[in-house]
Length: 58
Image (cartoon, one colour):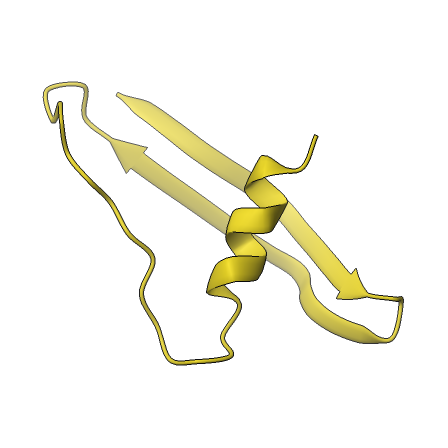
């Protein structure tokens, strides 16, 4: 099993608008589930793209 953990997630735009403030996320996937595609779904403006940006920032 592998997992992706974000603990705690904090993100804001120009220190004015807080998008995430202390939220926790854990995604656990069994190793037997190979070649699977996962997605993030939700209404417009809920931070899906922001979450992906946080995950890929160096």
